[in-house]
Length: 194
Image 1 (spheres, rainbow, N blue to C red):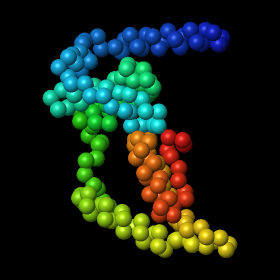
Image 2 (image 1 turned 30 degrees about the vertical axis):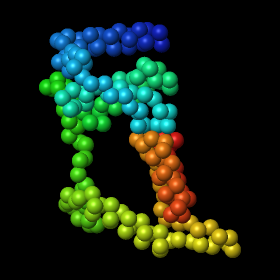
Image 3 (image 1 turned 90 degrees about the vertical axis):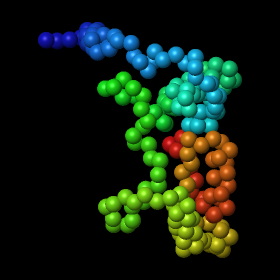
Image 4 (image 1 turned 180 degrees about the horizontal axis):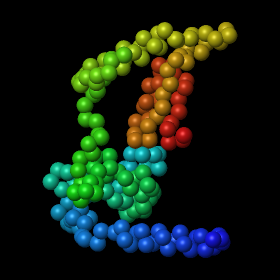
């Protein structure tokens, strides 16, 4: 059977429409049908990129229940990109089996450490983790610091790199970049650019 390009697109569209109609659960979704009238509106800025789009977080009983774009915000005027629209997923995931929003089971809330060559993850506290990171950064910087290169003062280390985060705002990324440069780190990049 020979199918033309036009017939192929018609058949594909018809198949997609049929799958969408058959696959729909026409019962009312309990999550989507919950009114947000009792929820407190908290305005915030989307943490993902440097655009600074406004978002409204809806909080009910101390829990985040919904996120939407802020229509009064001058940058995004109520629209959110795909990353911004998924802000709720930082904390909550939707369970399609139970039709309930649940705390994301993959979200880490404790420091996990695996020693070199170990197969076991250990829970550690934040003080221990920050001290361990600071110690390793200092050791690496001291071992690889270059003051001179080809007779020129460079004061740098090429053994450490920094990859900025789009989950931080501009001010936090600015301070991190200043910290990295003060340590002599010259390999700086940002993952929103990649």
